[in-house]
Length: 187
Image (cartoon, rainbow, N blue to C red; front, side):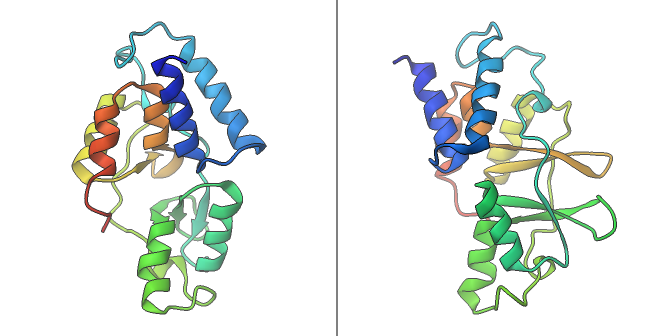
């Protein structure tokens, strides 16, 4: 098995939480097939590759008034570790909530996940990528911010999300994955 196959296998496992079956696997397999059709040297993506070419779209969203239990259930059902938070009645992005946010900011301090809402714990200071941003810019942002995923936003609306798993499948830059993964935990 070649190096690219190992990276693809790791990225798919990382992205999907090492789960098998279901639609997410098929989605990753179709993305991998598309990426393999590009002519590129391992570790070097063509200059015209943009975030829109790698992101997972559409992202899952919840509103500020969603209970933590409902947000966690959505994450579990979709095999994801985050959801984009939008303002009720609009699709305007307000922030992001992760499985780690729920564990650290709610459960660990004794909050009731049934009565606590996303608004009480979500990350408001959201840094996002644009669909036309280069993959290099996204990697730099993720390194600088020590985050494992970035929402992709256009006109204040979430259009996708790009994760370390997406990047590890598409690139052969193991050191980026190692540096970000070894970084201090999110705030």
